[in-house]
Image (cartoon, rainbow over all chains, first blue to last red; front, side, top):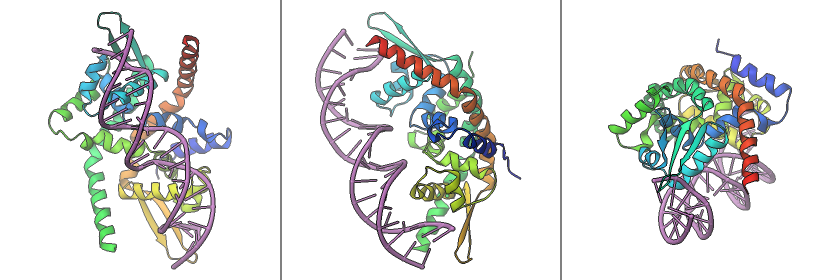
Length: 135
Length: 135
DNA sequence: CAGCATCCGCCACGATACTG
DNA sequence: CAGTATCGTGGCGGATGCTG
């Protein structure tokens, strides 16, 4: 009835190698799951940005987390960092080929989030109301 | 050059409403970004599971986190919980209609993770090697 | 401008023990 | 079997101050 390919692939992976930490889903999704990485990728989808431009695009990120998230994305090969030796220096961040390839599966997920955000918020409100009533 | 639709949508959203926490991407992705939720959804894609079956399917999850993750998924309306008053009781978890609709955008992302896991690990190793050399 | 260093609160998560 | 209750910990992430 449901699409079983996902769970089948997980079981297949689980059957052979046995390192739970080496699971591709966890390894990759954990990175995208942190607070800012996905958002940065989405913004960089619109083109290269400088450090301060990213700060402006995400008003409520601390520069510590922006730096760290960019480093992680660079380390994973999703983002390229280019330093222009001007004075004062400027640094440009852009998606790598790998990073751009992520946009393809990411776009539908973002679309799903937007489309179903209301339904999820409604479900939460209803759940909380029922819990309130039960107590 | 790149797909700009994602960043455009983010800017559009940012332009009107101004609550960063209300951003659909963050609100929804933060949930999927926790350590276990996505994995549970993937497993439930294969059909309904009982609590103990889920524990067996994810050997390294604590029952505390399994319970909590299932509660969160239920609260968001992605998972349905059915109690059978047998003795001892058994509880079945399955994806709701909303939960199954998530599989559609989720599957390509999991495919991307599997396909590019090697490239990411290689990028990490290279980055770490360069850092090592620079120091 | 683009950062690094430091301090610190909080909460996600795990381990353990107990219940209907 | 399917949970709750409690405690302890690591590290994610924020705030602030300083540098090339």
